[in-house]
Image 1 (cartoon, rainbow, N blue to C red):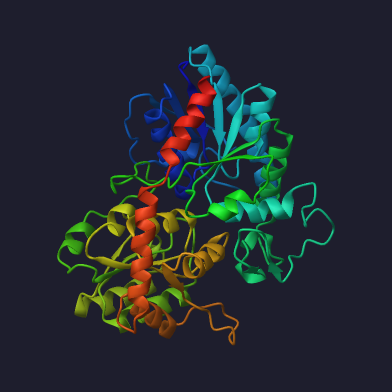
Image 2: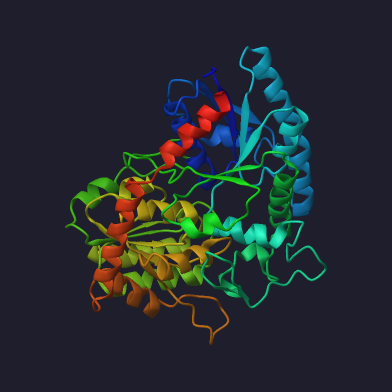
Length: 452
């Protein structure tokens, strides 16, 4: 096998950086000689500590906004500028690596970076698309956007009431990724997703690396399409349940000590990821719902300091009974694998969903946008590892009420009927299956084929 050098580029969001970093480490363990991990200039500057690993180096490219400040402008203009500047600086990065004696043999690009496939083709470098959502979500987007029979390749971009594809659950319109819905406010992201699917059609050897494992979505993987090489390389989660590295946020230092004082499976962990911004009313409902259970909880609230009134209310409420701990950030895999945690209240982002499956943690799903409603449905109806907290549709505020939060948490924690025990057994089952995943074998075969 020749000394392979792979360049991995990722969008500068925590949910994109984490799986890409895990892939970089696994590629090196699987036989790659060198991996360069690259994100935007601003994103790289925000990373608190770069992990050290033999063969791993770091680089950056520009998104046109290197100080992190984007103008209050049309999102389409921002994405267009990102594509223009990103393509130029990625090209220069590849050229400079070659001049330094490290020519790039293969490029792996992530979500939002659809233009990277064009750069790779123009430079005669083979590439693969790292899909950091579920195989089911990829199947849905492929169904909507492929140029042969995609249902959005006409003038009527309104999804059907239900989408029924071979190997997938039946998804109602409200369970589809929000970028496909008429109410979607992020048209530029939708366009980018379409470009991803259609760029794969232009590739003579289209390859998609899926952050999932065969047993989890076996039927969905089989039914995406015969012309795309789909390789399951997940779950891209730290195998030792330690911090992944490359955090964009400063973690609290006190939460593990606090968790250590709690009995086994007695704590509810609450986090809505690195991007979701909850309405103030929703945060109030979650808080009061948690308090009403009487169960200890650890809650990650990134922007608490931005709302002094809410901060004062929460601190005042918690000061008397010490029931909860609020932190601005933490190592999620470390918390989920802690013996005192018994339930995860989550937005059901794909990284969080996989992390819950890998450690066998039961879930209460409160999806916000993107693919999260799909994931919450699969958690409840396909894998049986949790339940979804429901919005009261009689009211139009889209808020999950405190009574619903209380009901769901108590079910999953085993305080309300036998459903919690069933969920816990299913969670343990999928934890076992994740440990048996053949993803390392798949990745090693992929690397050997590249080096042949």
